[in-house]
Amino acid sequence: MRIIELDATKWKKVLDFYADILRALEAPEGHGESIDGLIDSMIYGRINAVEPPYVVRVLDANSLPKEVRQHIETVKMALGEARMQLRKWHKRDVDVSFEIRP
Image (cartoon, rainbow, N blue to C red):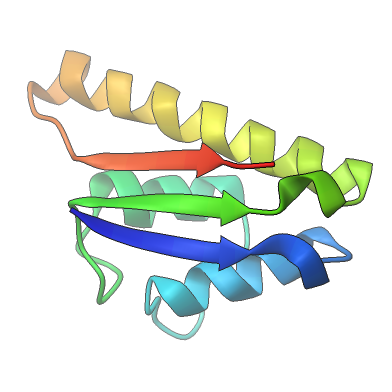
């Protein structure tokens, strides 16, 4: 399983998170900097150069500003929900995980 580690120590705003995750996923130019954009490319796939299976691991999350930490918590929850919906509605699964480490 591929592990994509993101170092959160320099993130000051939500867009810093998106810059790092989209770079790590080798997302195409114009990829949306939003939760919906991540769901489309990570769960439904065939958008990024990096395809599942993989784990995205955010490291040093305790150093994040509150707003950024809350946003990545929401991203984690939304990706999990989208994965469950994919299984329910489309009868398939994608091996994508999102972890937040202190």
